[in-house]
Amino acid sequence: MADAKSVVVTGSFDDFRSRHVRLLEEASKFGDVHVLLWSDETLRALEGHPPKFPQQERLYLLQTDRYIKDVRLVTGQVDRDSIPWVSGINPEIWVVEEESNNPRKRAYCELHGTEYHVLKRDDLKGFPVLPGVPRRERSSRKRVIVTGCFDWFHSGHVRFFEEVSGLGDLYVVVGHDANLRLLKGEGHPKFPQEERRYMVQSVRYVKQALISTGEGWMDAEPEIGVIRPDIYAVNEDGDVPEKRAFCQEHGIEYLVLERIPKEGLPPRQSTNLRGF
Image (cartoon, rainbow, N blue to C red):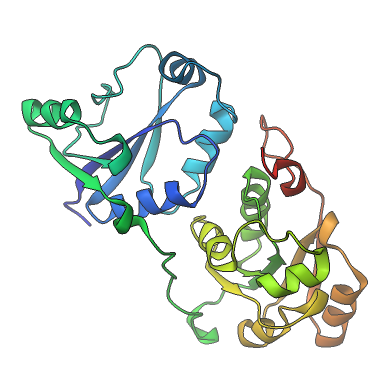
C-alpha cells in the first residue's frame, strides 16, 4: 500500500500468544503497523512487576511477525492512555483491544486528530489461513520443509525458521492433535492444531504452514508429497531414524541443525515453558 496509513499499537506483548498476533493481523488491515513496545523498565513502572520475557526477546518476536512494519522500544515513564512520542512516526490510527479501551484513550485521539479503532473479542476470533501451496514452477528457489509440534511457541522456533529460510522457501508442517497425543501422551498438545499452525504462519520467514494428515514420526508424509521439498531440516531434538530413512528413500537432502538461540536471547524449549 503506497499510501498506507500509519497504524500504532502499544503494549508489553509479554508471553507472546495468538491473541497478540490476531490483534496485529487485524490492525494491519488499517495500514502499516508500528508497534511501540514497552521496555522492561517501562513495563515494571506500569504493571508493578517485571516481564516474563525480556525486552530483547519480545522485540525479536515482534520484528519477525509478518503483520508488522516496524517495532520501536519505548523507554522511561509513559502514560498507558496516550501514544508515546517516537521520532519518525506520525500516528494516524491507534488500534486497541476491547479490554484496554477507555474514555481517556478516545479523548486523547480526539484531541490529537488520530483515528481510534477498538477491536472487539469477536473481531479476533478464529485463526485465518494463508493461501495454499503454490505450484512448483512458480519459484526457482529450493523448497525446505520443517515438521514439528510447535506447541508452546517461542523464540527458539522463530530462530530455527530464520536459519532454515536461508536455504530456500520454507514450508512448515504442524503435527495434528491426535498424532501428538499418540507420540507424547495425554495432555498434549497444549494448544489446538489450528492455533499452532496460525502461530507458525505468522512468522515472516515461513512461506506456508500446513497441518499434517498422516501418523507417527512421518505424519507429514502426505504433505511432503504435495510440497515436494528439496531439503528436510530438523534440529537435534527432531532427528529420528524414520525421517532419515524416508529422505534417503525419496532423494531428499536431510539436514540436522544445532539448537542455538538468537544472539543475546536465552535458550527456549516448549517443555520448559508449559505453564510458565
